[in-house]
Length: 433
Image 1: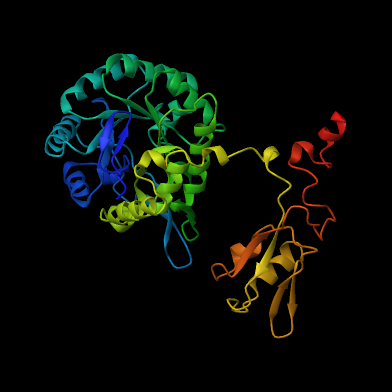
Image 2: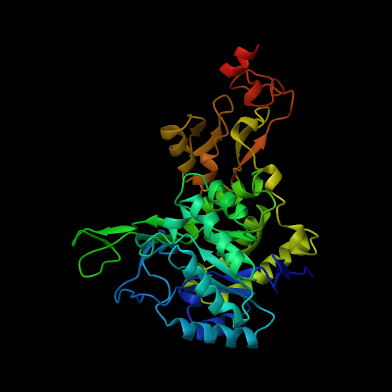
């Protein structure tokens, strides 16, 4: 059996699945239920200082985006950080950690961007027994308008400054949670590393409006006729999160910086993808809110079985395995040529491939009498659109051409060139000659 135990920046947990700082981790009752269900760790919902009280809305807090089958693809969240008293949260954290010493328990923090505020709250959480702190520099709504959350996370200088304060005034491992609402995710990650962060976590939610009510003309969720932008999360954000995790993992400036992956993790496969791109563990929110805490059991069993099949004995065998294969476009191998192939036995003759290719792509699929569809290799550029629109899995596949063969579309021998830097159509390559 694969060993799922993880040691993330010195924080041990029985598996790499943590609940992210969010509504499911707002109080002792929820966290105990999560640990009973099998979660390896929890990041407690963000605590703030004892200044002006945090007041959440007493109406809808979530907007949603659904697939055609009403499967939840994304949530738009306008909830703020915890509105429960700080002392109550700290007391509950201490009790939970005492009763579950083998589980990771990290405290998410967000206070005004001044040294004394951070020094004060760090002193107050020291004796909870928590394993670490996560600095919430990502929340895009409500708190950002007050100069916190993403307002800090979008300014690398602020990230470095606050991280230095935290490392100065706390013995706890420090995770910096990054906002995706920025042009280049590498810059805040570099700032966190320069400030002494032990790790980064990403992504936090994406600034969004998920829908507009066309009767009231108000964004959803609607509070007394008005709506506000919120933070988008769920399966729909996973591709964005994977890219940002990979960018940090492969950047020379941040390579080796531990990463906690967040963003649309719903299955064990999602988790494995994040880990393969460099995440040492993953944090989950929307999946738990959709299916309940026991969803982690499928994640645990699925990841364990996958690792067994691959001959991996520990999560360290998986972390970062895909990073060397992430590159820039200019280094892709243009010597590789593939063509679409249709399995006639699996084809249900729906014609989606033909319609998509004929109308919007390269007119590379013929429709013969009896609705028999065939790929015309002389026009196929292997764009993969037909594979993606086909409702039958593996009915259409991309088959690579052998090196030395002639591409009927271009007349080029497959081995003529390697990548864009040496491609004959690259003007820079011609200029170099």
